[in-house]
Length: 468
Ligand code: UT7
Image (tube, rainbow, N blue to C red; front, side, top):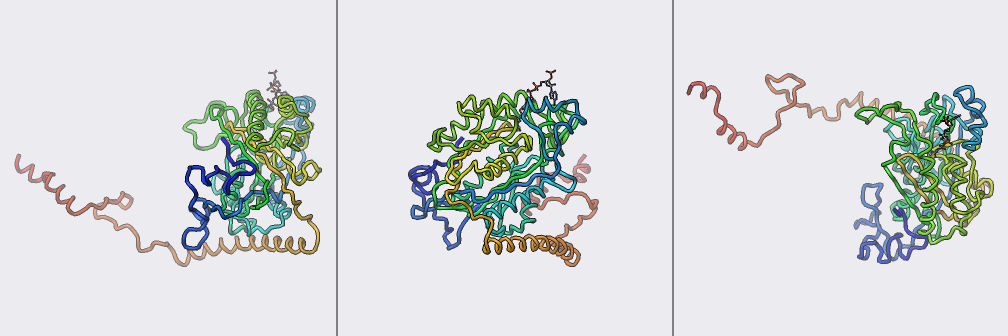
């Protein structure tokens, strides 16, 4: 499946030459006929830019990450399960990982990563239109992690939701947000991958607990007329492999045998096999859709699962392993957070430069996979320095403090409103029918003529008895 248009689409919306992909020219121009802009966040369908509107591209203009302070080495794990530093290094490449402290949560890590990304983009949280969080370790099934981060940021204009696609989640979310920007319905989006895998580990299972770590990464996407940004995206799924990797939760009729509620399980060998071939196939497909060759690619940022998977993919694509960025020796597998964390570090190390074509490839539970080709913004974002940067940085800090008090105010306002006003539908209490217990369901209302007809058709029991 192609989740996106090509690098330089001939029209305004990344579809086909006629403007809307269905053979008809688009009549929509982003206005709803009464002078107001339409957008899917307001509940309407995405508006289509008209032929006169400029082509929109979704650029990554800010990025940030946050990992917990606590480092757990392979040697530390030798005390937890029967394993060895040598086995873990040679079979996975992992040397250490970060584990969330008691005070850390999937929300706090995601929030910090988002703050860093907003700082880098130098935009205010109140400018964000959409927040998508990719996570497999939310605090709640709902409310979403995205809503909680939205509240902490004070991103009062933003719609927010979580996206579940396991380790492919970040690239799925990047694509969704980019499409919303390209369609013209939003200007700025925040995409976050955040995980506390340590909380869903079965610490008796040496085949999984040595692999995973905690952390978060985020990017800010902005609409621009400059060609570039997300050039193409391939999203894929194969639910026939659903039982190979997962975290069971409450919806089962019966929990599958051998699986523990809220604990991660994985058939490592099968997932390994799937990963090595899907990386090759989906990268080739995404490059073709972006009209690019492997030689045009400056860096591949893969999901950080296993160094042996990366080596096998490099061999199979016939490219040097150095073309793949890897930091899994320091963080292990951080699921949906691994790609944005790796991207942040790659940029910091000078491995991604303005104008570079970068490939992001995620794969994991579902089974799912997602590959994006991104052209890094040619204009480097402002360096975090200078008077004007400091001013807008202070404004962001003030907004976070304001968001904290806004949250407190709204919570106590709701409490007082409930106390003072009571039920919002005071006068709408159900009339209790005579002879019925209070908890019996009310008799549905009938049309008067239906009641009459029914009376005629049904013989009255007393008269029937008299007849007999
Ligand atoms: O994020 C989602 C994507 N996830 C992945 O892509 C993970 C993909 N899978 C993998 O990375 C690898 O399959 C693992 C790292 C999980 C396992 O590596 P492997 O080379 O496939 O090992 P294996 O499962 O074939 O196990 C080999 C041996 C077994 O012993 P026997 O049966 O040969 O006696 C295991 O019991 O290694 C044993 N073993 C361990 N030994 C020491 C498994 N885990 C450990 C351990 N320490 N932690």
